[in-house]
Image (cartoon, rainbow, N blue to C red; front, side):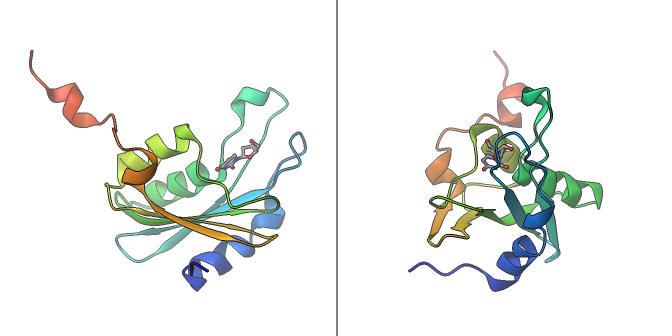
Length: 136
Ligand code: THU
């Protein structure tokens, strides 16, 4: 069985109860480690206008950026049920903005099971700032 960093797991476990998921009933928490070593947390926040929902991973990363971080080294996703889930495509793109190919992504489920990937496994071709700067 894959191991996850205990501090990230504990950080996610401590907040998953705060997830606001009245529509899906699927609580998620995330904990990210920035290059400073500090850990930031987030939960999914749903909305009655469903498309406005923000995933736990993005909330955690936005909290990190708010505190001045610009580089994310590890991401842990904790889901309350079912198998460990990878971040959605939108969250992968946001992780990509502040991570690199080797950013580690862990997922764990309260029902058991752990997965581990690198960002390059889940998003092998990444849109990024270099494309914006490319000349014709
Ligand atoms: N969700 C996350 O927070 N992170 C994921 O990696 C997958 C999906 C949330 C969004 C929504 O509140 C609920 O899970 C169901 O999609």
